Image (cartoon, rainbow, N blue to C red):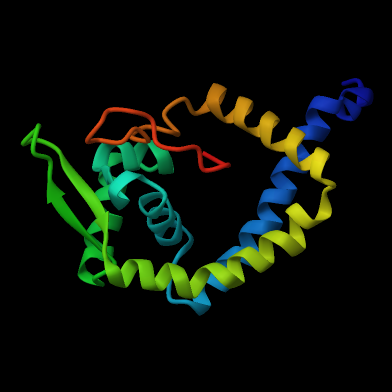
Length: 170
């Protein structure tokens, strides 16, 4: 095998992405644990808090988190027992339900976010000049949309059917 193939910038790009993700994920996981959350619980709370009406259909939550529908059901069950989210029936489709963040869930996010933002600033966004960060965000959105087209499922306001206001990192 040609050893030069491993110097291919495509392999380098994916390797760096994986290494950066692993390093950030480890720092995030420790900080989430300090606040009584797992990484997936934080992601669920953040997705709900950023969604119109602080809610998402369970199927949309599954699509946004890359969890299976049964995986989302298990996480939502656990978080509902902990009082962080609740379920609400979908008025237009009796087969669907919404996961809705509760006041306790918002409180847990409020407690967790300052440390989370410090980690992001120190180890990620603070490492980049503003123009480099904009270019990275644009590139990551393009890749995300190509490999995970359901990632913004349910981001339209359910009452109006209109897309929600841009949040900066969809």
